[in-house]
Image (cartoon, rainbow, N blue to C red; front, side, top):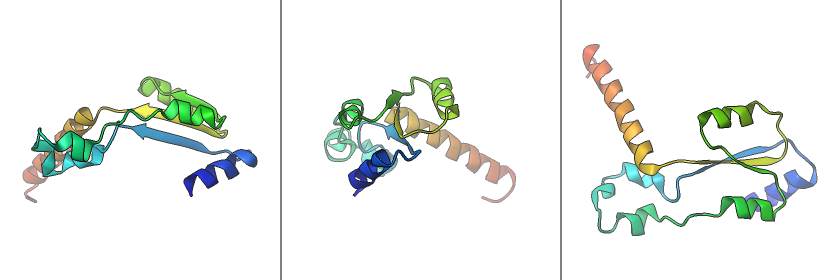
Length: 116
């Protein structure tokens, strides 16, 4: 279904910007308790597969950009929207740690406010 929409947007030159967050697999599963199972987690849940986003997008003759860092992403997002794909590569472990830090800050604030 998404491919059909992709081709419709291309055919009618619709201003569509698609941002692909590429964490090389099932990053969402890193938040589950299974993440601690070092023996089986990657094969069953992480499922890294190095998706060739650039090759797939360019094979469809759609403009592609890789955001190299946050500043580059901001520059790309400041540009007028055409039909394009921007890939943002993320690190699953860094993402998990960042979220845990944020959750801890919220918990500590709730505790200070007497709400926990």
